[in-house]
Length: 123
Image 1 (cartoon, rainbow, N blue to C red):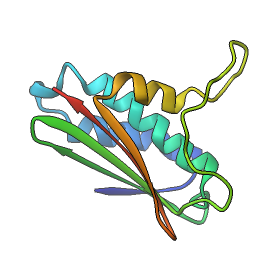
Image 2 (cartoon, rainbow, N blue to C red; image 1 turned 180 degrees about the horizontal axis):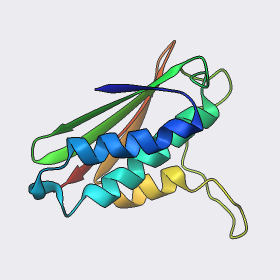
Image 3 (cartoon, rainbow, N blue to C red; image 1 turned 90 degrees about the vertical axis):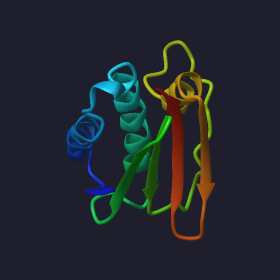
Image 4 (cartoon, rainbow, N blue to C red; image 1 turned 120 degrees about the horizontal axis):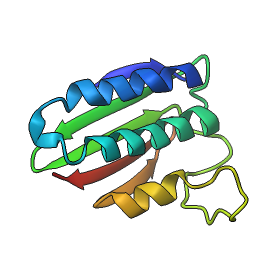
């Protein structure tokens, strides 16, 4: 597990954490997709949760037949993560759609003080 401040500048560090954690050659086929989907979940957490500058985003990666990534943030007062239907000209709103398309499974768990988004990908 690694924790990152909830600011956009940390997304590069999250990508580095994914590459470091999944550096073993057996993950070569999925590492780019895992990195992309993790980036999408962390970016959503930073943009839409209470984690922002004063909070943290936690990333947990486990692998045993599948890679499982879990992103935990400080929750939201406003919205729950949902797969959006972005328009052709929209500049955002495709993150969870990518996760839904590329991952074997994904989900969201909303708690009282945190939100957990996760996905699994076979390797």
